[in-house]
Image (cartoon, rainbow over all chains, first blue to last red; front, side, top):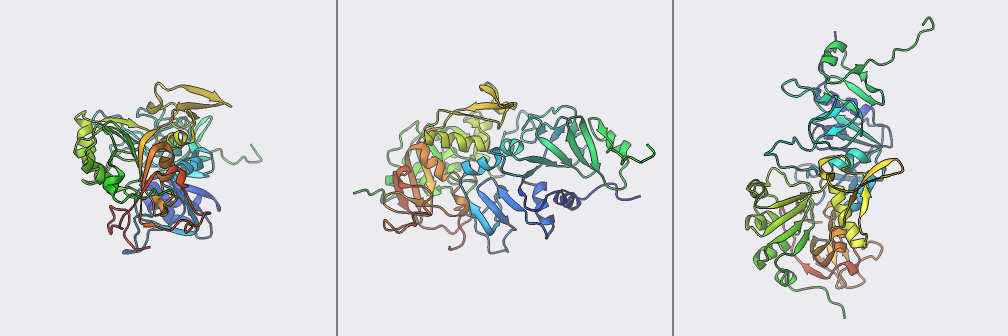
Length: 222
Length: 233
């Protein structure tokens, strides 16, 4: 019996494993930002941030911060050799124009059809703020979501239909949670990976839409 | 003789009339022309429509302009921040109008205005609350939303170096909205940290050609994170 869930660092490492050498990637604010710390050293992955930088490096040493060089989360970052700066219209052209290979976003809800809700709870007293979420969701070649599998109270975040206001329609390709990696396919959600100790029945109960097991390798005798 | 340098921040914003639409550059505080916003606060114009990515941080700059109730409407992508208390209070009290625009649509609407484009179809926001009531169209099997250009009377932006023709270079991610806002306003006012003789800026490195800039003001560097600059270059 193995682990029954992945830690946040393990989730980040699991996402990082799927990012190929040479990819240009945008990591959303919060949990997705952790993916940067787990990218394999033998792969050259280029990080884009929507405020106008590509080729972003790690956080600077204390005392070395320059607040003209920040990421979308408004934290100081560094620039790698080969990196460049550009204005906002060009930065969003990189997304909308399909030039980004992968973006990794957080989410409130993802539907079985790949609809994403991550910008607004719709609560009456909430102040709406969208930033670049809608552009990122529909712009990258592949949009990955990284989130806890359920809400703090155990409610479904992977749902048949989103009840929160949508960020984008049919835009999510893959969902990474603490309990599973799930592909969004035309025929529905397909389980790709999970911590060793997770039972399929438990995972299905925590998922608000039908989950298909991965196709077993076919044997000659079948 | 072309001379776009003006002597003071006060002079640079003196003619902003009540009811003007003013674009303010910056993403968070990087590239935010706090000094021009301060001068606008002192100048007294009211009923302003402000275009900025955010809706003020802390108690200075744009936040101070909001707190002084000089802004009737804000067009932005991300008003809610940990330190956006002035906006939050006005919004909850129904005392400020908010037009929330996805960030890429905001940048492209500004660019379109500057480029003389009458609007554009974008996939961003299709099917969401932010596209409600807007014209949609299917193009090559994909759904798009019509977005209109966003013009302004003034753009206040922060650049790094300039010359008397108004040519500008920027510094790192402080560039953000500066180049597109400069194109979209009738009058663009840029602050720079250095004004150099004509011909000193590498023509290959000029980011905003002077045609888009009407006034430049030289300001001191401010050694603070809120000013977007901490270390000497």
